[in-house]
Image (cartoon, rainbow, N blue to C red; front, side):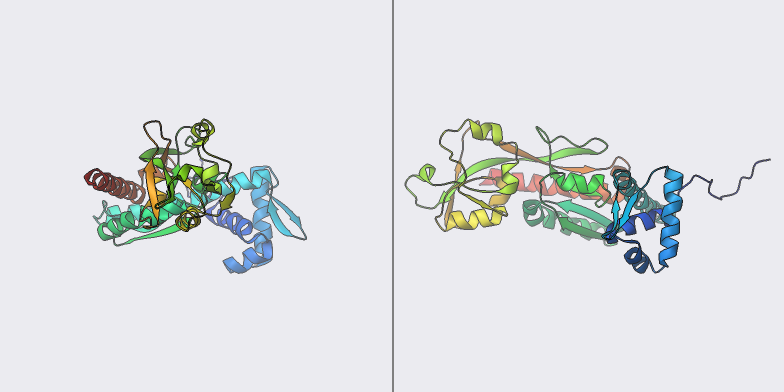
Length: 310
């Protein structure tokens, strides 16, 4: 008769093995991972070797520079982070349901957002969120929306929710789910009082250059190649206000723009940017993620109402 006990099967990975994988990748070495976890280096080495046997692949390249994940290791660590996050959610939500507070979110909520969202959209949403769910502890990481961007943070298990540019040429990555929160228009931004702003040189920033305004941009013969590339939209706005050029910028970046700049509508065919959220199918059902999305939608709706009243 087979045992019905709770012992793991020989090929199963235990949570502590997943935590060691994540620590080795994060610390880039077995010794540093052992120190971070409060265990011996031999315990870390033994665990990783055992995990590699179970997985059937080498997960880390060992060398003078420490431990670097292989392609298989990168995939394994991303899954490990997501599994460990689900185990955390299991404990928090089961405890809440058992206490009768099943509709109140608690615990950690990790959010990745690009700069203008972190400045102009998230603060109001988090204020509403923590007022309704005081036991929730949001953590926000500002991530540049280049390459994998905020969605990549979710895919790799570093964030529960990413506020990302999605739609058009930036679809929701495979394996994640998401939806659009708002469409923000692009506008011409130029120094106040300039008689011919379209004659000015263009100031741009790296994240904007990768946006899906490119097709529209290429059809505008009045827009020159950028002569200045800055690190973020705040620097662009500052340089435009100082009279150094003009820019094409999305709505969130223009929140609280100084009096030294003017914002001009680009007309009916102006480009827009879709801002939305991405998360994993599993965490999409969690109380914390659902609560955040509700508050983000409420803030976006309020912003839209304010703009209609102007």
